[in-house]
Image 1 (cartoon, rainbow, N blue to C red):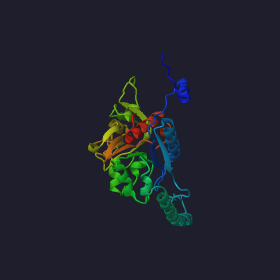
Image 2: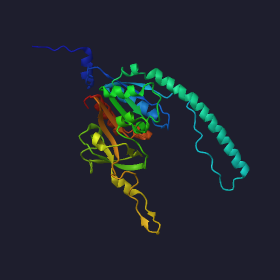
Image 3: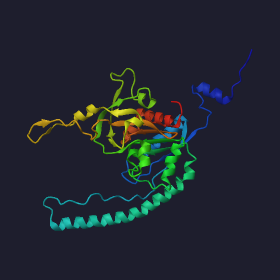
Amino acid sequence: MIRLLLPLTALLLLGSGCSPKSSGPTKKLLVVTVTTGFRHSSIETAEKVLTELAAKSGAFTVDFVRQPAGMPVNPGKAPERQPKETDEAFAKRSVDYSAALAAFNEASKTWNDKVAAHLAATMSPAQLKAYDGFIFANTTGDLPLPDREALINEVASGKAFIAMHSGGDTYHGFRRYVDLVGGEFDGHPWHEMVTIRIEDLQHPAGSVWTKATDTNPDRFDIADEIYQFKSYNRADKQVILSLDPSNEETRPKKKDKDGSEKTFFQRGNREDRDYAVAWTRTQGQGKVFYTSLGHREEVWLNPKYQAHILAGIKGALGLPN
């Protein structure tokens, strides 16, 4: 009789009902959550979710390049005169605003230098080579990387790039980045409950949103901020999710110049009504996954969204789902 002797660790795993993780090398991802524009309140939640997905999946590890402390607060728009406001009161508010704006501009110079130094210390071309891929989770603005071309070149060499939500609202003036993502933010006409079409039910990042018993297995509803894109072409990507154009018809009717009511179907500005939400594409030898979902904290906490981005990350890394 042949007896198989199993190591103690294997016996413990079998007894617990768990299966051992792959013995292959774990992929390393660098997650960037730095912003120089609008900063989403969901970023802290995003960092926690990505940490948990890495730990639970065992497929990859994550290192973070986080926001340096001390980002100055923008005083906002110049004050407008209020009804019945005195000249003196309005003049005082205007002076106070001018002083606050001057202080903000001065503080911003110092803070921007701090951000540039932080990125130089964490994202040099040599340091980027240590990673298998990069995640831009709700980044915004022009990030002062020491060599932004190096990032694109690393992806093109065969690495992964993943971006969530405002990762598509980053580097508007840097064409290679816009091309990498596959489009750039051009407004968000929808911030409400919308219907999303699953265009690719075979892709794991699409199939996680539905089940066979659903009345409409190729649709799901979600409340989030939905982007429209420019510099976007469907031909160079595999679209997974898109906005159902019938959402445009939910816009309230308005009165035309002649007093008659008219329904405005074109809430967005694309004549082709192609409002893609998630897609994959290739960049040289590299793979890209982008999803514009992820504005709200509750979206990041949604198990289906977590499964959506996990499938996208694995696919971009070339790992099985």
